[in-house]
Structures are given as C-alpha cells and as structure tokens.
Image 1 (cartoon, rainbow, N blue to C red):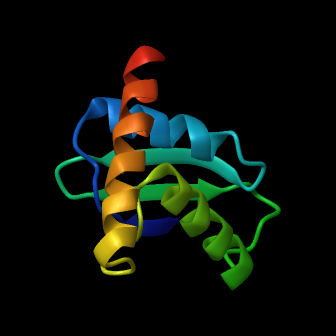
Image 2: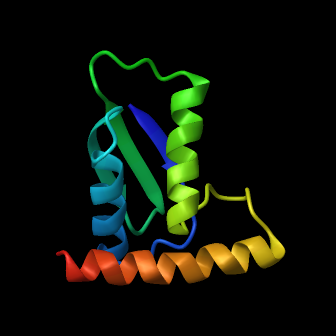
Length: 96
C-alpha cells in the first residue's frame, strides 16, 4: 500500500478522475481517494515493488493532473496545479 497526501482534491469528480488515471497505469492495481483528508491510497500490481522510481512516477502523474503532494509546489506552480485540478475535476465529473 502506498499513500500520498495531495492538494486540491475538492469533490467526488476529483476523486473519480484520480482513480481512473492511476488505475490505468500498469503498476497500479487499486486506488482509493479520501476527499476530506486529501489522501490517495493505492496498491501496486503483484509484481511491482514500491521503489523510488514507481513512487516518483505516480507523484508526477498526480502533479500533471493538478494534485501535487502536499508542500511540494509553491507560488506560480501551485496556482498552475490548482488550475489543472479544476480541469481534472470536470473530466472526472463527466465520466462519473
């Protein structure tokens, strides 16, 4: 089990978008998102080890969607991440 504390999760649309994007990755088996806590928990596929490269790939995927790990982006990057999260949220709501 891996856990990421992330920023910008606002609703079920955000959670749905995160789940769909991460579950599409070969390394990831299941994803749960706790909207209230801003927490993403996932289990990896049986043959995948939770090494730094896998963790970094998942963190980068979350960042690209607008959900950076808590405390990792500031200033304009934080504003950009927040804007991306609105788009990811809308896509998550449409595919619900």
